[in-house]
Length: 72
Image (cartoon, rainbow, N blue to C red; front, side, top):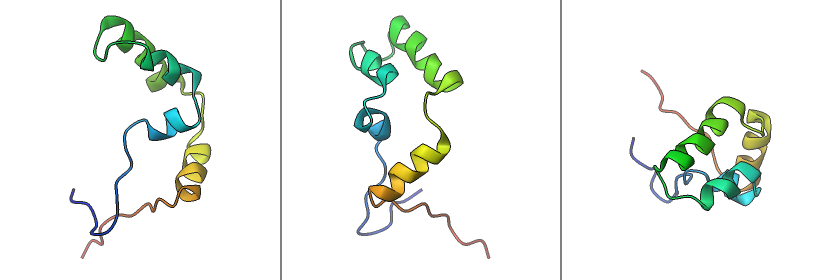
């Protein structure tokens, strides 16, 4: 999907780093794609410490817009 002119896209794990998620802090100490990194990352996939409500509130608070294309 192409970005909207004049806007930036959310950077992966931007929220996690900004709220100083303890799982993200552990990930930041590991080499990406290493077995230990993937083991820690699995926690995020199955047991995220934050809710979608918290994430959405953070997004809107940072000025992000959630958009989708119009279907005709």
